Length: 478
Image: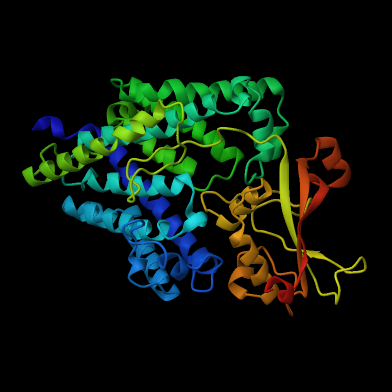
């Protein structure tokens, strides 16, 4: 069955396997650094409490058997080491089942984390990483040619990711249809980066061009991923370039990076050779063991059956965004920013050691690692790392009704909890925790170039009101 092997996609396979593994490595490191404080035994939303009320059948995870912070760290460190082995190419030099087993272990391990991660893991790129790891598991090793059916299924994944995002925008706010969305987005996105202010200050005609380019890349280009070469490679290049612009101007965890990696499924070695004048990588033997072909074809057929509901969702008037249709996060629906907020609100958390929170009390701000706070601080580059607490603070400022984690967060600050404080940029109360805590809402906007030259500030902020009035440990426990 010569058609089964796609030896002309060796570069694509190497990029896909190593790139997805690199995203897993970042995701597991994120879990090591953040999961215990957010979801651990004494976390803001403890996993033991979650698994006591949610059954394994609803949300499969190894932590239904038992959870401890030590067990979580063992799982995450094992995932980190396995992912690193793929990044350097070790499993790929073995038989085709070896990288398959490694990726399925990564998939199962991270699925166990996502399925108990609650709101801290409720992002579309979590499901995207889980699905990608499962599919890439069946690309085989260097001993066999990449299966063409898997290459095309990954293109179908990119199609759902891009076209789904485009349709969400067209069905969303009018700002996408009147081409004004990017006049606001660079300033109001969840976590701006060092270039966001520059991008925001670009002229209106440029922002309209950005929106048109986005519509073209997401609503037109994805169809050409299935075209003959070199058209499919050109379509992949357009997607890669648009994703690089998003990388350059914002912090969206590994979403843009994993999309770039997945787009390489449409790039063949012949096109690379035509552009650069030399082979991308030595082509693999097109022969494949019969057992391997049967396994890959069976898995692909299973994934195609699961594609039915996501396909209907793409063309539904009530399109779901970032939705999983099964508990294993396989063949999901994607899309983001159907509407763009036109004003930026930030929740500023402050503590005081005063005996009473009256007008004479001195309040000190807690500074987060990524989200805006200090008006003079340049927004940092965080992505592809994911600061989960900072992202939820953005949703909180938008009026999210999911506030249980935030109430627990304020209590942990009053207790001086070390793990929680390590989630922040610095602890303004290093000697002892504050007596009082409060949260205020501010309206933020980027300074103009003239304002920045005069004041040195990067933001202008205006107080809007209180989100949480001054509270102490005694009042929070009533």
